[in-house]
Image (cartoon, rainbow, N blue to C red):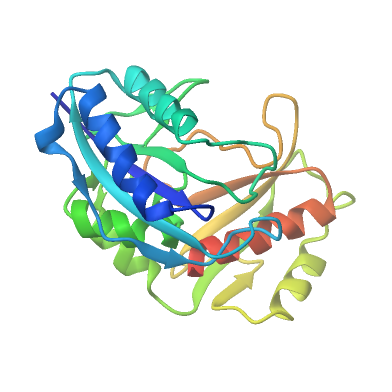
Length: 249
């Protein structure tokens, strides 16, 4: 039997009802209705200018005999049954179901990355996940979700900005990004120098066919690095502003 931690989110329609229905359908699909646990629902800020109104978020644990890939397809099937559409990236949505953890398993494939690469730094994910899975351990960072959540509550969060070797200063100006970000209200301190006390390092990479903008890098062992794949300076700024919202809620 496998234990799966999933994140639920949405801001269209009867979201809380959909959360309950999604977990019920998943439980029956995996033949383990007695072992599904759903957290409370939390209201969170929308991430991105096109995201619409504030979101409702929750987390659930589902026990299943399905493999991680089979369970992922079950999640996608439930999303479709409940009317999930993907017309606008980071847009309003009826239901998001993201697979966060599969116990201690680490998976690196085109179809699935586990643990979810953004699990450790998204307030809207950890706020509900920690309620029902606080003692679960992140298999790469070797910390519990409760520890990761506590670390995320520090203010201000210090984040360093770096350019990858393949993204030249002519494409993106770190100093201009920092100046713009500091001019906006924030609980994040953006620095250009790495420090021992920083929460995370953000590395900007050029977007490509293999790693398009908004895609995830393969998570690495014991590193707190967030890789953003950007098309140009304007795109880098938008993604950093969205990251700030994800960090602070």
